[in-house]
Length: 594
Image 1 (tube, rainbow, N blue to C red):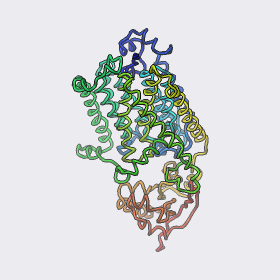
Image 2 (image 1 turned 45 degrees about the vertical axis):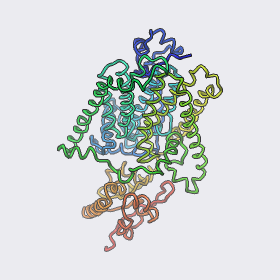
Image 3 (image 1 turned 60 degrees about the horizontal axis):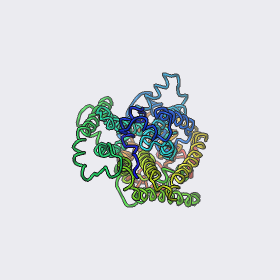
Image 4 (image 1 turned 60 degrees about the vertical axis):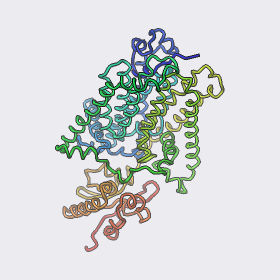
């Protein structure tokens, strides 16, 4: 007994009507509607409802914990400068996004009242972008399965996973890039399902925009190219035996070369259009300089490179991207501290649960593969290719870095939804294992909702961390002073929210450009400040012992402990603050020869 497949082509449009159903399934619209399991609401309305509900939820849960993700405070650079500028290549257009968004809201008479108000505006931008991603994912999942329940599990599971929810309710960089990549995928699906090339070309342009918004988002081009080359294998197929890829691969590839060419040409054209314009307007006007700037990868010598340890921590990184299984503002290395050891069994249970779920999906996929339709195979394979491609930054950079898991999680949830739907739709679904799968999936997503929403609700209502301490630093320092710090919370809040009060010198950020360069810049900044009559302060960084200094500043950034030796013996403590699990001091540097 064979099933009539919903069709990979049905995933192409997230808002098509009855004409689209007839065109994409090869059946009359009435028959397609009957296969829609009684769904009377047009998909466009469903997608719009999902977007509105997700937008409201994310905006309501905007976080007061701006340290829940990396880089949330960078939005305040726009607030301080009041003009557009560019970031490094890894999130080049982020300041432009925030500047344009805040300008649009200002035109609607929604204006920021202080730095915290501006953060809320930037958070709203990410909330809307994340909601749009949830809606697109819902539409694609629904077109693939014709089940609103499956689409809700896929989109809802992704939307409330810890990494996604944290970025959807905060002001960090990647979420708009995720939106552009998701829109590119949706446009590509629309184009290839209707044999129209302008959407395929448009998808390439959007992918270029995604690259410029957040660099790793370009990796979605791998599954997009795979789908573009393999898509005709599913056209008109009604069962698994109709897709003999071994016999059709080269003819199919040849037939798809024009579309592949359109996609790659538009993507290639977007690079000089976006980067060339941005670089030129920011002062880089010569072609060789533009090329050198484009290929530059910041901090590669610090974080880049594959290793066995990174590979072994990919599963814990995936687990942490799904569940809040670690202490607040803390990585897996914090579990060694006595005060955090209570989290060890929590993290272990979470890792084991995710490992079992992942293995179960793989085993189930292999078991049902000969029986599912060609469309479901193509969809599942594309998701697998997408997962492998988009997980690369986690493997070679930082496995527990939230931003790198936003796309892999989408591929994982969509692929799992397709496989579970395929298993449940088989004639022998009355077997206990298969019958329980939807319920187990619901339980998994319910745990995601319960744990992550509880954390998000708490974060939305907590007092902004380190705000009072940073305010006290601002009171003790004045205009024209220099404040040198590391990545401690108090300094980060102060340097971003009160940047106009004094010049901030972030030592580890400067050291990413080179240890010798950072030491030289620090000496110059101290000398310039003193000559101008200002004071020099160190916030937290002089409190580090040599043992605390060595793992990151010393071994990774190659900045010797002795680089601050001349300042340690000539500084006086002005104030002391609590910063998470450490005590930091604000010290004023007074040259010893005075």
